[in-house]
Amino acid sequence: MMTYFRGLTPEFWSAVAAIFSFLLSVYLVVYNDWKNKKKANTELYALISILIGFVDFVQNTFFHNTATLEDCLNIVKKIKSLDKNILDYNRDYFYNDEYDEKVLQKTAAFVQRYVAWKGYHCAIELDVFSEMNLIIALQRSAIETILKIQSVYKGKNNKISSLITDDNRAVMKHIDEQNKIKADCFRAVENNLYFIENQQPLTTLYKIKEKQEFPLSNLIAACYKVIAQGKFFYPLNQKEYLGTCLFFFNSEITTAKFYDDKYGNHEYCFINEKGEKMGIDKIFSLLHFIANNE
Image 1 (cartoon, rainbow, N blue to C red):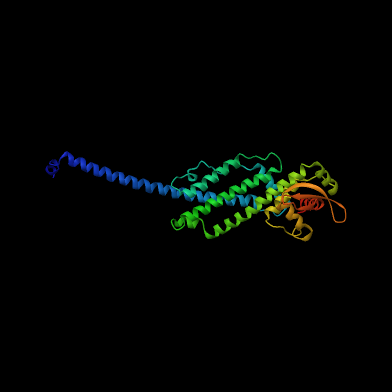
Image 2 (image 1 turned 90 degrees about the vertical axis):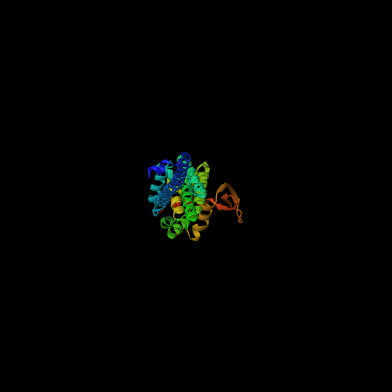
């Protein structure tokens, strides 16, 4: 045997070495590719779990218990003092370059929103509505990322289908639809309360008509309660309040003016961005009611 190998030329051994080197390089490429894909799958599962957990965190923290004014006062306090280090956006599972490009675009958008939210701090009481809209935008971004992962990897990875079930998707789509409405309402209410609070004649008029101080903290919590519940409950859904609720929660006040009604009486009205009018007395009556009733 040794005599046989002794007769082989250096060129032969060089060719054998080259073949083995090539086979080893192929093996390493295949192995590293397998290892990278396995790591990507593991991190993708972690990402899904983190994002679903974040969606649930927002729901449980800000929308789970809004039955009473006291509940919503406590939620408003949480909004202003929330620990924003709940996620570590430096973790690899946000950035694995083995992910599909469409998924990476969504994760990048989520991280950017998260960093922007961390930089925001309430300067005045009414800023809680802007803060809440940043949280909602972040939750919506998490939902978009989860749904994109599901659509991209559907049929390719059975474990993802078990992590993102049909029920999960239905719930998240419903949350997302409700969030669009809530975000518009939070924006409108912040604008409207800011308009009233910063018009000294209006706050004075409110105090005179309602015979009390302008209860801004209660009003903020009361408006939060109405928006968080997703619809107007009795008696706000009755004729006495419904039109006023729709005006105050679904549009932005731009000015206040005196108008003469058809009987020649002066009427002080709010005007929204659509040019629609609503008597100031009706708005004050609504605000007084929701701020002082459970």
